[in-house]
Length: 172
Image (cartoon, rainbow, N blue to C red):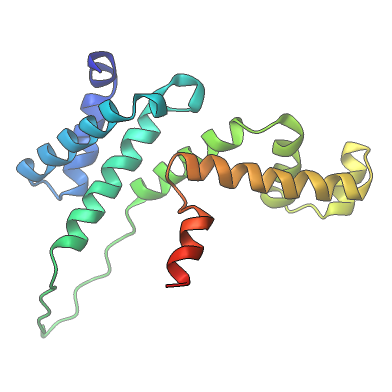
């Protein structure tokens, strides 16, 4: 834990300060809770499972979101002038990108290249099949199983709710 804190503590603190809009006490709570969860889930931080920083940032972001949601009621008020639109915070998008990239790196090379060709480069199945020198059915199979493996990887790091829990909540 000391190694994890030494390696990622400053970046996690900066991230928590942005999440809490500079509120030091809330940022301390976010960092402390993140490190506590890291201690409880050391297996998730094994280097073979991906980036420790990505996992820590994802947990911190979720803790902050949970805190924001648990405040209960939201106060609305009217203003004479509409405030200017604030630019989108790119930190969440960056964390999600790191998480997806780490999950992609854990896929087999065949699945990863098929997903890259069709989803990131916009190739059709026919074009990908010609490029790889394999039948179209093979590309379709690699896409199907690659997406399944990707879903499992993202569920493992908590980026997606598991489909079984999503189904059980929709049935209630």
